[in-house]
Length: 180
Figure (cartoon, rainbow, N blue to C red):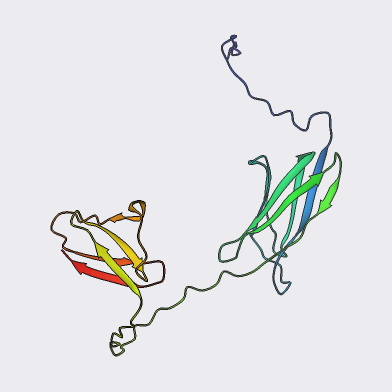
């Protein structure tokens, strides 16, 4: 079999991040919040969003990430039905072994929703000193205590198609409903 000849148009990518500097190791345990080791959790070491190392925990929750280039990492520990554990700014020096432990909390259960029958509440009208002034062109303003309203404070009521009623709420929590 003849050897393949490469031309100057063939491209190769070689990751030399750890070359000549010395590699580092991160090791530790992943447990639940009570301290029991979590088997088959995944621990990832990311550098600038790139996964540089990934390992699954053993039956006791132990993991080890080897041959990591020196630098600053984000560590992530994940396991189904548990909240993800994160460590930001883990700084590794060449030839260093660093211990990082994670205690993962279980994901909360989905809340249940129960329908409840209840009596309809009676509407109570509360007298206030706010008035709604509607202009013939469909603009409106809220008037308090008879104060004059500047033209710039007018609002336009958008009523599209066959829609004939509009509900508005002013800044004081008062709801206005009217029909065109």
